[in-house]
Amino acid sequence: MTHYRLYFLNDENEITNAVDVECDTDEQAIAAARSRANGGNIEIWQAKRKIGVCEAGGQAMSDDAD
Image 1: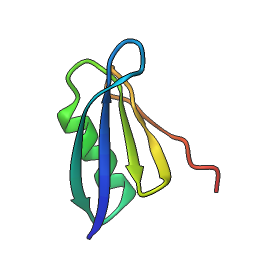
Image 2: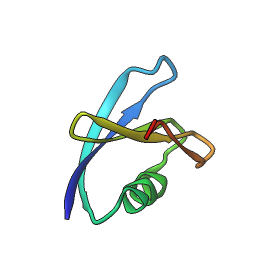
Image 3: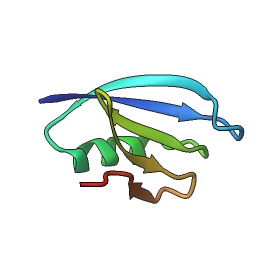
Image 4: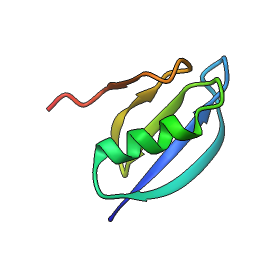
């Protein structure tokens, strides 16, 4: 299991809350963010690596530049 942090953002893209989750893959972390979506954007991070953003509509896009 890998440690991820989900950052909940308001309309001004300011962090309003953060939740730690343990997942096996980036895809599971994105799914965890989608399941917690409450109308705002959620940034998904694994340590210093930004995985992506789960947008308010529930879509996630990767920010990885591998």
